[in-house]
Length: 433
Image (cartoon, rainbow, N blue to C red; front, top):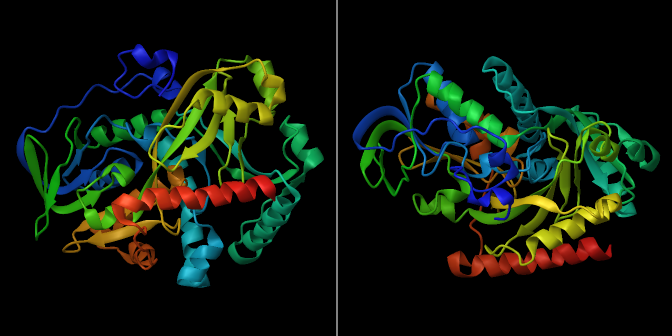
């Protein structure tokens, strides 16, 4: 990871996010053995959301976090809050049927609404901005987006306006795009501020969070036990909310997801007028290439630009230069600008890009993973759905659990090179058609 804040004492990996927040006071590491009603692995959006809901319902909740609250993808992501799931509505309809696909879509919209409810209820200041745009680069992508527009309105009751090139250019000063779909109900935020706000709310609700407490193994049974190097937690219910960072605690889950590196960069502050000249309505933007670019403005008027995913588990060479080149294709007027911060992290994708949520073991171990790049709103929804199931209302989790999932082919040795080869084809298609 790259950035001038690399040598600071921040407990978080270097990023503009980490450089622009005040961390919560550190929580102690687990020492000794505890009992709890619910033990949650991971203090990210899923774990904190579930913990908050369960604590407010009177459960004794312990969260075990290997690093710090919001240290993983929850504190490093692109900050774009959108409806839906990574696989798209058509895939879910093919997997589950139209009726269940409609339920899942409506619940994804609830996930966005739930984020706003939590922001308001717990006074979480996370730099929220309204508006999101999916943009087309090529004529075939206009057809793809307009087909999606029709599908969303006809099958899901979610109409979105089409902006042609002229309307789009009035708000987004880039020559790269030929049109797009605008969603006033989605938007963007500062992800680490939101994670810390959830953490603060969970602590206030009585959740016990232990940082620096990596879960090394889990013992299944009538009362699962999560073991760390210096202690353990025995519980009635366990929740695995580490996503791509669980690594070995539940091998059956590990085989269903692929860790993918993704990267974000931030310019220096451009000044209010210059920043707003780029994106006049302050919306977030994402293209629809397989290897997509996405970007937005930060609260201090810098451009945050994301993309350049890595499927090989290695940071791409010359990352800052590559990211800057991609940015200048979008905004040629920033040709003289470099990045002050470049950082990355790992997201989890499932083989079919659909959410992978459910139970394992004795049906008292719950999990949510496979957010596939749609995690900011979806993770908060997952926390609520799992909390509902633990409280005896499993109808919604049961729908998610019916989504079929397969292991990535090739096992640990060959799944990454196989995926790299597949991604090369999709990138070639984006470039040529």
